[in-house]
Amino acid sequence: EAQVTQNPRYLITVTGKKLTVTCSQNMNHEYMSWYRQDPGLGLRQIYYSMNVEVTDKGDVPEGYKVSRKEKRNFPLILESPSPNQTSLYFCASSGRLAGASGELFFGEGSRLTVL
Amino acid sequence: GNSVTQMEGPVTLSEEAFLTINCTYTATGYPSLFWYVQYPGEGLQLLLKATKADDKGSNKGFEATYRKETTSFHLEKGSVQVSDSAVYFCALSDPGAGSYQLTFGKGTKLSVIP
Image (tube, rainbow over the protein chains, first blue to last red):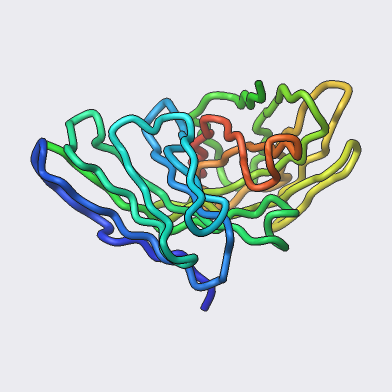
């Protein structure tokens, strides 16, 4: 089954404790992206990657890091989380065929709470 | 830059009511337009799309027409069901910015009551 898998789905952590949210897709997609969703603000892009070893900042990259060492994986790293990073995070991917139609495939989301 | 403005919610309708969610956009090029839907506890999924002016996208009883003259892409459904309760996002992709990059509206939450 084609899917984007994020882990963990739920996480409560404390300020300053490094964490990684993993994202993996099994569709051989070139493009992957991270978004955060906050009430009243909608979806905001954090980082995206057009292919392996190619990453770029989105609209709200501060406090986040990403890497794209393999095509299927695109982890989101919070080196020193702060309470303002409490949010619902989504990973998404797209490939050449889907991209032409604008279809992004989303994971189910990771709800992060930073105390 | 590109932007998408959609009507603020929440929207509450009775079952079988008519639905309209307004969406207007600003783009420098000739964007493709999309509606994504997010059901409770899930990620977003593509609902429908239109790639050029006057195109009509449709799916699951929902429709939206790409209106270049009014820069709009309003979502409509003739008779909503409880199962349509979700958050709806209007979005555009600008080929000049790379076809994978989407600009999203802030979302409109729809609740349908029996």
